[in-house]
Amino acid sequence: MSQVIETGKAFEFTPENIEKAKVFIAKYPEGRQQSAVMPLLDLAQRQNENWLSKEALEYVGNFLDIPYMRVLEVATFYTMYNLKPVGKYFLQLCRTTPCWLRGSDDLEAVCKNKLGISNGETTEDGMFSLLEVECLGACVNAPVVQINDDFYEDLNAENFEAVLDKLAKGDVPPKGPQIDRINSAPEGGPTTLLEKTEGA
Image 1 (cartoon, helix red, strand yellow):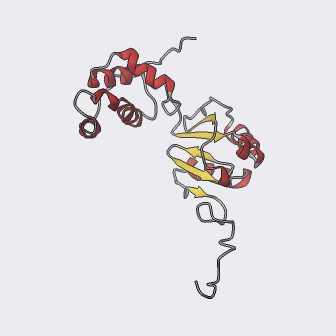
Image 2 (spheres, rainbow, N blue to C red):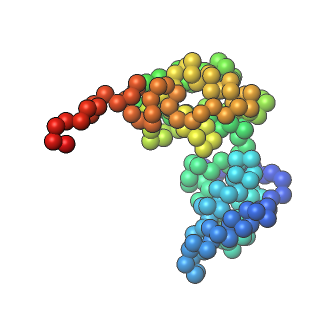
Image 3 (cartoon, rainbow, N blue to C red):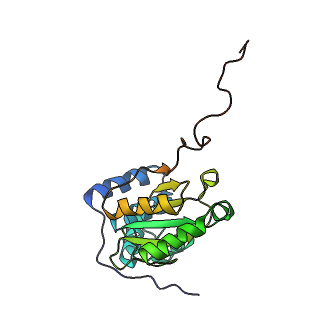
């Protein structure tokens, strides 16, 4: 099945991103600079409001002297590249078993009821896009939603709504667990090895 790549406005790296691109390229041995295609696609996506237009893909190809088709192969293989516009806040809702067992259906319902969007959709104001994804790798803190680059963990309908409310106001809530725990430690703090034993 062919995929239509959306077009956008003319694209070229900013002077600052040209310098960043040169740093990425310099990490690869002589004759292997085309291997920098992935970090350059990421750089282009960040500059282009979190998506890669046909113009951005062509630019990266020209920058690295790679045929457009080779760049397209990479961009369509990896799910971290968005090939159509997404909202300012890109919500990736984990639907793998641990998140599902711990309430990802409730988070999906929040997106539907509060934002009016389902999987693959963007709010009319362009603020939020939702994509259901497979394992984000934070199973012990399930359910998890990745918002842009940050993980919001230990979510339920109430605290997820609070996160969305803050984002809608332009505030960025603290990332990580949204309950009383540090990283992946037990809720409420450590419960074992609290006392030093004799001879230790």
